[in-house]
Amino acid sequence: MTVRAVLTSVACTLAVCAPAAEAKPDLGPYRGSGAWVDLYDPGVRADPAGAVEEMAGQGVRTLYLETGNHRLPRRTLVGYPQQVSQLVDAAHASGMKVVAWYLAGLDELRIDRKRSLAAVNFTTASGGRFDSFALDIESTKIGPVLRRNLALLKLSRRLRRAVGSSYALGAIVPDQRSTTISPGLWPGFPYIQVARLYDVFLPMSYSTYRTRGATGVYRYTVANVALIRNLSWPRRPVHVIGGLAAKLRPSEASAAVRAARNAGAIGFSFYKFSWTKPAQWRALRAFR
Image (spheres, one colour):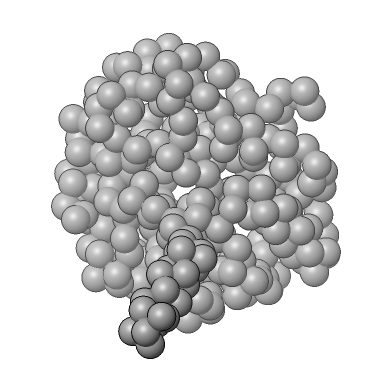
């Protein structure tokens, strides 16, 4: 065999034996505008198709749908599964993505894990699935903070192992003031460790609790994005949840959207769909 033939054979062998590059998580569901629906939206459950039609008409790209929280009866893994199925199928039929989210208590990690994975693996009547899953991280049932951090990271590692590295996981986190000022909701939040387990951050940038006026809302929103950019490693993209829709003045809603866009966020939404009024919809449509 000639030298050239030997080299060709070795190259072919290496090409066959080399493992395929692992797919990167798809962050598409977190890009652009979103709308949130929780377990306390009876109007949406009563008319899933109508709700999705309104969202689509407002240019919503992703529905963020709560599948459960730590207050559910112990045996319930997904709340209102029939309506969840209808919402997922209707959203997909309208060209929208759907992200499931679950509020963990962190005091019973076994049930938190079961409910989270029940959302990940949920299948609709027509075979539809959620496009991603995000964990809502805000419960203070566990104290002190160090113990709470350990519980959060233990649950997060279990979730990541279960879904694999190519599945997109979102972390819904408290706002900048809640995680940096003591006493506060969660001072000492473990951004670096969370960034290693999740692919995108969704800060609850609720200016409605923190400041008033367009200038204040703008600065507050920018600060939320900057904090995550500075404290997460690797640096993760951000989808901003820009406040309680019903309590935002039109100028404040526009300022929040503008701030998120200028700060480099990949997506934006207000909490929540049933509270969103025409002024907030107009502001949301400006996010590109």
